[in-house]
Length: 65
Image 1 (tube, helix red, strand yellow):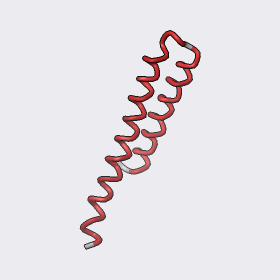
Image 2: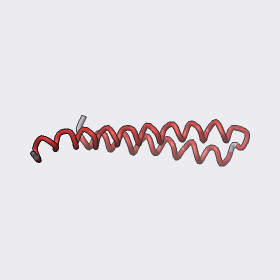
Image 3: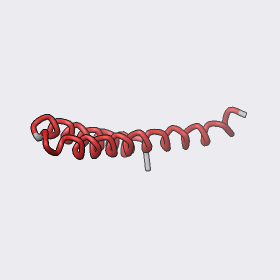
Image 4: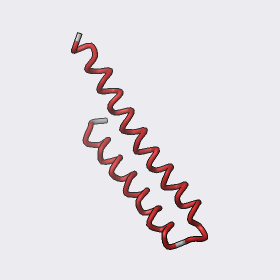
C-alpha cells in the first residue's frame, strides 16, 4: 500500500474516533462504551502509522549502508 492510502486510512480512523467521542458527549449512559470504541479506532490509526514508518525505515536502511 502506498503512503497516500495509509494516510487516508489514518484520516478515516481518526474521523470515526472523533464521531464516537462526540456521540459520547451526548449519550452519558453509553459514554464509556463509546469512548472505548474511540480509543480502539485511535489505536488502529496509530498502528497503521507505525507499520508505515517501520516499513519505510526497513526500506531505507539498506540504501543508507
